Length: 126
Image (tube, rainbow, N blue to C red; front, side, top):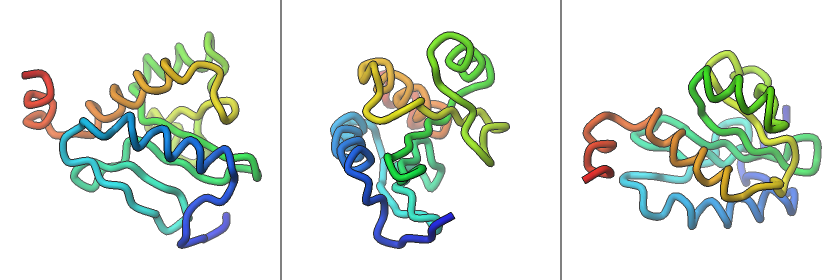
């Protein structure tokens, strides 16, 4: 695994980061950080809910999900279990750009709700 402190360089990953910045803009307390593996991580209170990296050169996008959603996405939508962290619900899109950005954006919002403390989720719902 590459440890690139500058973040992803794959054009599809860079485009995904730009698009997802808009998606998470209205969510409370979201920060963007580069992790020790060179992934851009969107985090809430230091808990990641989206990871974007170079993948195998063409970009990768993983989203935090619950077990039921992960299973459904893998069986019916062409996603796959994220290597190393998939046992925690992380699910990756098959390729970038994804076939359905609207679905990805909904999944990102769901991932935020899983990672965020209850007080932030309640504030979001008000």
